[in-house]
Image (cartoon, rainbow, N blue to C red; front, side):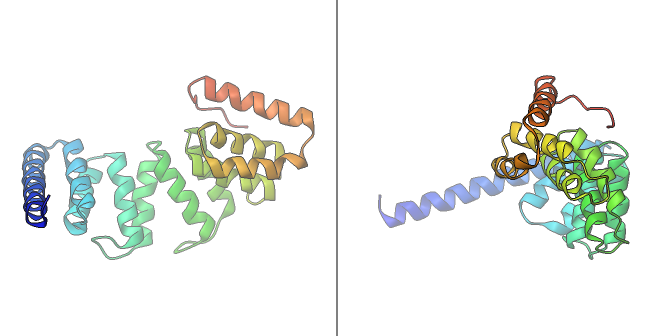
Length: 216
């Protein structure tokens, strides 16, 4: 294939991609204009994927105000990173809190990170553990791992190495390779019986379809 033909094919592909993008935008705008909050969020995601952050933030906000918890979580991220809006961690926290109260695990995890780091807010390990726990209960892998290390270190929670092992095992069962390495580091601190009990508990959770567990 000559360079000229390759160039023409590339131009054609880009033109088709642009046409498809415009068609998607027009269709979503029509639905979003009719008050469809899911369409608003999808429109925001389309803009975001094309790195058009300002209109993405605008549509995320419309969907967020309409109560879409995923949009609230994403809008919080936009404010936390300054994408399409001026960076404002207080506003990010506000949107994450609204989504977290609707049990969105991503927002719960983000709140956990905010309280753990203390960036733009008073550091509070107890609150960090609270929100990591809520996200972990819903299968959020990173929240499970972060909460596990808080139990391992006794930071924000009472030190509980069997619980730390259990939480890391949940992440392993969901395919996280880094968690598998962490599990090997925690195992020497436990008895064989403690490991068997934690493994059985984790297996029960995974085999039950990741059913939300009750508080410890």
